[in-house]
Picture 1 (cartoon, rainbow, N blue to C red):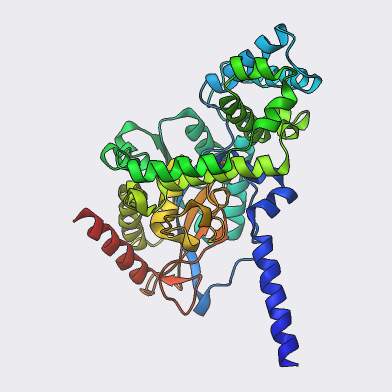
Picture 2: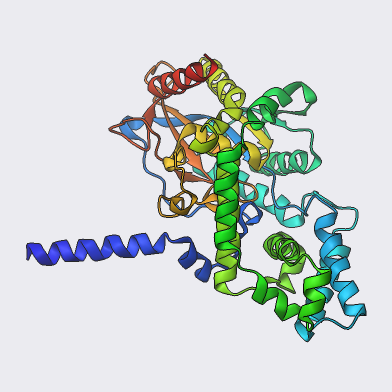
Length: 428
C-alpha cells in the first residue's frame, strides 16, 4: 500500500512538472510564447487564502505595467512589410508568403500613427484588474477612501491609470482620488540606471548568450516556406532578422483588434515557436535577472522603487484609512522588481541558460501586458500593530524568500527588515 502511495505521488509530481513545461504550455496556448507581448491572461487563482486571526485588508501598494499596446519601433512594422513586398514584386513569394504579406500590411495600417499606444484591449485589461481589486479587497475602498495614483509620463501608462481609476469610481463614486504623471517621480517610477545597465554585457556573458542563440536558432524552414527561390532568399534577405520581426508581430497580434480576424503563428511550427521563446527568455534573464555571469545585480535597478514602496507603506500604516497607492509603468520595472523581491523564486541565480526553464524562470509568468504587483496589508483594527502583508503577482498569491508560518501572509516588520537589509547591502 505504501509503495502504491509513493508511486501515485511520484506520478502526480511528474505530471505537475510536465504541466509546468513551457513547451507543453505553448501547445495548449501558443500566446504564452509571446514573452512580454502576452496579453494579460488574468489571475489563475480564483480563491485567495483567508487571512489569519481575523485580519482584514486596509491598504494596497501597487505597481503595474501598462496594458496591451501597439509595437513601439516603426521598423517592426515597416521592415518585414518592405522585405516581403520587394520579394513579391520580384515574384519570389510562395502563396503562404503572399498571404503573410497581406496580413503584415493589415497590421502596419492599423498601427499607423499609433506606435506604442494603448489598444482597446489594454484599456479593458485595466478596468478588469480594478474591478477585481475592488471586489477582492472591498474594505480598502470603502467610503471616502484615499487613492493616490501615479504614472510614468508615457501616454499608454497614463491611459492605463485612468482606466483603472474610472472603474474604481464607478464602483464607489465617493473615492478621494489624486492622480499625476510627472518627470518629478521618474527617479523611482522608471529609473534608468545607466551605470548598472552598462554591466549587463561582458565577454563571458555575451559569449554564453550568443552560444545559446546559435544552439537554438530555428528559422530556416519557416523562411523557406515564405520564399519560392532559395537563392533569392540567401542573397537578398536577412532571414534571421525577418524571422524575429515576424515572430514579434505574431506575438503582439493578440493585443490588436485584428486578432479576431488573423494570426501569424501559422508561419511557425511548435518547435520554432518554442525556440524563439527560449532565446527571448534568456535575453530577459540576462538583462533583468540575477544572472551570475554579469554580476547578478540587475534586479537592483529597482532599488529606488522598492525603497519608495516601503517608505510609503510605513507612512500609510500610521493612518486610520490609508486606501491605496497605485503606480503605473513598464515591464522593465515589473520584471526586475519581481526578481529583487524574490517572488516565487525569481531571484534565481543560474549561469546556464539551458537550466532556466527547468528551474521555473519563465518570463511570461511575470510580465504580460498589464502585469502588476500588489502588496496587500492586513490588520484587525488601527490599534493592531502586528501588520501582515501578502504580495500578489498578476493577482496570484506568491511566496517570498522569508520564513512564515502563515504564508502567503508575512509579518510586515520582517518583510520590511529583510528587504531594507538587502538594499543596504547593495548600496554599500
